[in-house]
Image (cartoon, rainbow, N blue to C red):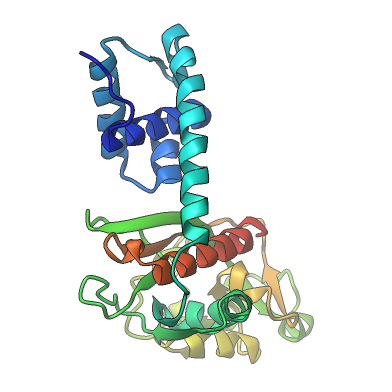
Amino acid sequence: MAYCYADMNNLNHMRSLVAVAETGSLTAAARRLQVSQPTMSRMIRDLEDDVGEPLFIRHGRGMQLNELGNELYEVALDVHRAAERFESIAAARGEFVAGIVRISASEVVAAELLPEWVVTYQKEYPEVQVAIVADDTTSNIASREADLAVRMFEPRSPDLVRAFVGDAPLAFFATSSYLDETGRDLPFSERHIVGLDRDQAQLQPLWDKLGEDLTHQFVFRTDHPATYVHAVKAGLGVGILQPLIARKYPELEQVHPEIKLPGFPMYLVTHRDLRKSRLVRTAFDSLKSHLTQLVATI
C-alpha cells in the first residue's frame, strides 16, 4: 500500500510517531498532543498497519523505536517541524484578535490565580475582554456557558480538547501567629481546625488519613471555598489548602509538611470546535502556559 504523507490523517500519524518516540509512552504522547490514550494507540497502530511493519519495541518501561522506526522518525520530525512553521506563519497573518473570552473556574482558582494571568494576557491582546465565571459547579462548554474551563479532574467527553497542566497538591496550613501561640508540634487532636460543613466528601477523607476523628476540633465550618481560605488566613486554626494558593499569603505556613496529602489533577479544557477560533486559541495557549509555570514551581 502506497503511503501518502500529504494526507492530513497521515500528518497526524507522523505527529503521533514523533510524540511517542520522544516521550517513550502512549500516555505521555497523548498528553502532549491533547488526545486520549486510546486515540494515540489507534493512530500508532494505524500507522504501523499502513507501513506494514512494527515501528516500536514494546517493553515494560514503555516504547522504543526499532530500526525502521528510527528512519521514519527522522523524516516525520522534518515534516512535523515544517507543519509547525506553516501554522506559525499562517497564524501570524491571521485575523485581528478581539472580542470576549469567557473562562470558567472554581471560586478560589478564579479569585486567586486568574486575575494575574489576565494582566499578562491583555498586554499582548488589549482588545480582548476576559469574563470569569467563578462557580464551583461545572459550566457547560458545549452550550457556550464558557469558552474555556479550568478543571480539577480529567474531563471525559470526546468533544473536549484538554491540556493537562499538572498536579495541584494539598497540604495543612495555618497562620504563623496561630502556630506561635499554640506551638508547631501540637498534635492535630489538640488543634483548632477549619473544616467543611455539610459538603465534607472532598476534604473529610484527608482528615481521616490522620487516623482519628477530628470533627470535634472543627471550630469553624463552611462549604464556601473563598470563606474557607479567609478563615485559615484569619488565624482560626489549621486548614487544608493548595500550596499554589497558600504561598500567596506570607502569613501562612505549612503545618507538618512531612504528611503528604493527595492533590487534584489540573486541566484546561475547551470544546474542539471553539479551539478553531483564534480568540479562544490564544487564550487557551496563554493560560495553559501560565498555569503550567505556576504548578511547576510548587
